[in-house]
Image (cartoon, rainbow, N blue to C red; front, side):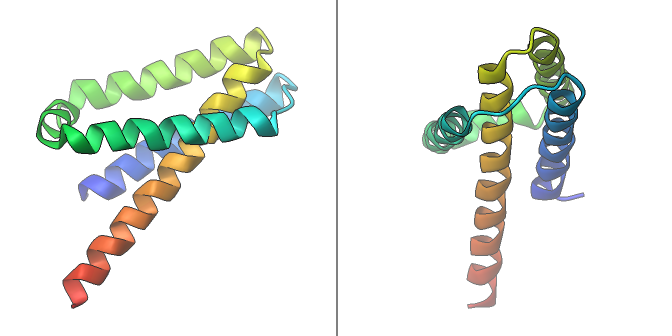
Length: 115
């Protein structure tokens, strides 16, 4: 499995977990906080690009990937149980934006390979 596919799969699992928790706990999402979560993800990705090699070396560790997924799901469950509209919205917005960024980056790489 390629890195992009693996990252996409992890983010998709976390996103569906966040959406499922929001539905089960009847947490209404906030458009403003969804947008803030998306902006946060774009900002974090911009910072990660600056330190690309260090971030990649850390992220390639399976324990880090599993811990990130477990942490995201744990925060989601806690936020849903507490019916925290803000936190659940931030998570959903951030994860959705990450999948968009990942898709755009993958499309750009494929386009570059064809030229």
